[in-house]
Image 1 (cartoon, rainbow, N blue to C red):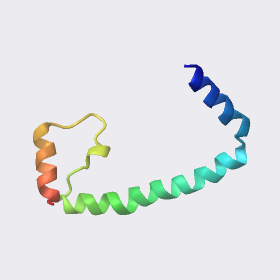
Image 2: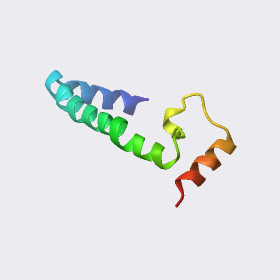
Image 3: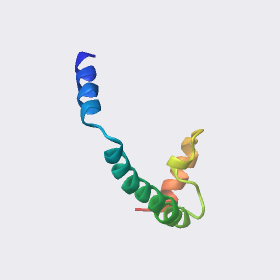
Image 4: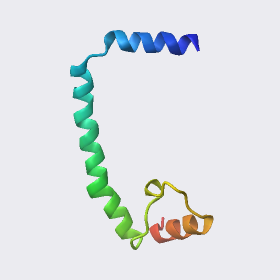
Length: 73
């Protein structure tokens, strides 16, 4: 726990709003690219089945097998 506290302290010493904002912009660009480009491509290949990351309440083993079979190798 002491190591975690030291790490947190070191980060807080060097953190600025400018740096946080500078990291926010590229992370959001990647997120929107995934949301509007890569995820729809994968779902189209799986005949409209939702991918695992988009199922917050889980999925059955049968669903997992079916999705992986739809996606193929």
